[in-house]
Image (cartoon, rainbow over all chains, first blue to last red; front, side, top):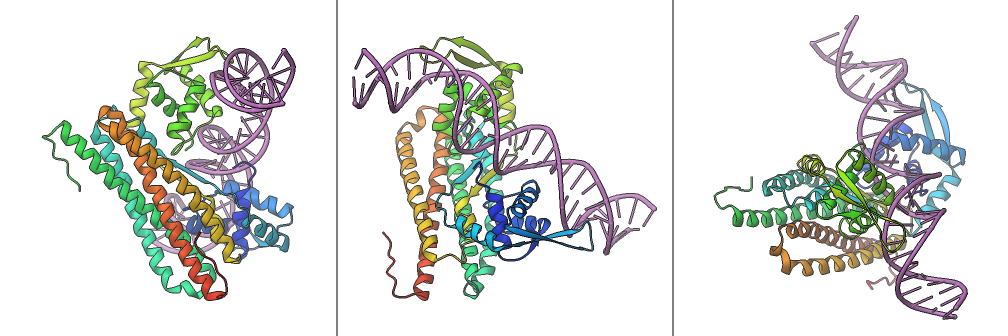
Length: 194
Length: 194
DNA sequence: TATAATATATATCAACTTGATATAGAGGCG
DNA sequence: CGCCTCTATATCAAGTTGATATATATTATA
């Protein structure tokens, strides 16, 4: 991860499509990209300054009406070349961290109910995510052939759909396994799916 | 993430099972935990020092035969309480970053073949991961009822299985979609699944 | 037998990421 | 008029990543 400068290329990718301010870049990232790669102001503003220094973007100051002056950035030809070079690099990695699995791994001494609760909360959270992504998908599907870019956006949504479904399938399987174990140990308990 | 001190609890969780040195902790993490939460020496050694200062672990020095002296750490009663408190905390989050999706998102102007290549490499990599986890699973399945802890370890493996399968299913669907698009644009090209 | 590679073992580094907060003006609401 | 929200730039401490430094002992290669 070190010295890869991913936020820089994320910004170049967005600016390749339209001119934006740091604040607007943050909003684009939150809405479109944060599901698979996030960035905060602390990365955006220094990255913009660095990109400007290297001549990959240029800044123009606008009066925004509200709040402080708006610094709008545009990509340069050098910026487009840098983006193109980065896009064909083969190496890319996944970084995944699952707090629930970490706790589960050490939960051997805990009452089973605690783990059941935890997995249910996980499932509920991702059921919402799955519903949200279903909406994205169905709103994008009709306009898929209108713009070549739509297909690539669609692929990232499709990825989310598969992954959230995997989370849900795992949750159900795990709950089933735990309930079986639980029944074997204390039979009088009435623990049902809600 | 800030001030959560996850590495500390990871270490307590491992020490709750057996006494270990920093080096051995690293190996346990790499083999058992790194699939869903990683930690390096830079986190392990300072964490151990902090845990010792807080009285959650105690150190005893052993002669290792090879290399420098071995500092073996044992969990204390206070450490066990701290671990138990952490284990019942409800909040846990997922942190996922997918470099492939980030590049895909901006790949609208790229030749389709580049994206196809990228997804194939992704699929190949995770086909290996899926195979590896299948081995873990089949070696653990027969001894599931020998130890209560085995079930929890099994659940983390099951999670990996679901997620890798989702990656593979997405890869295949994405490749199909891209090949359909590609054929529509330049028909003479013979690009087949390998 | 020299030497190179590997394994044990502790420790630290620069660069990057996270989550939160500081600062400040404009518009809406009661 | 005060409070909240939105726009907008900017910075912070704490945590994480990936690599490397240091030192010793065993095993493989020449």
